[in-house]
Length: 108
Image 1: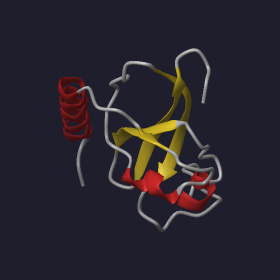
Image 2: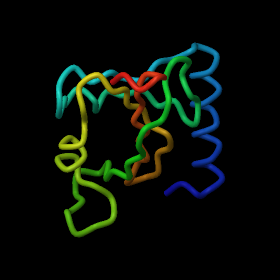
Image 3: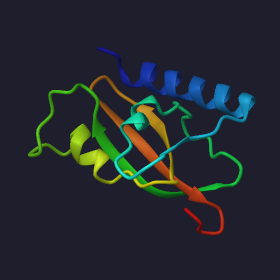
Image 4: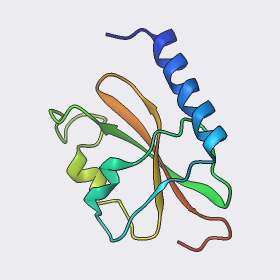
């Protein structure tokens, strides 16, 4: 199990790499796009031309239930919208925070 410092260091490293590469979020091809599970880990990096529209707390273990605070994958996928960008903001051992982006100016 990772401690808080290890998690912070790992997430900071993802931010630095994303900024250096000018990484972009995964763009959903359709509502509920299961390909979103391939989203990049960008940390708190905000890609140029995108603005954060939502944040999700999602179970990454596959063993979560609907009664827990973290969304199951199925519940998260029901929120995924075509044309919006998705990336990991931070990742813990069993849950992740996901940023949802829209294009700056509001176009999805």
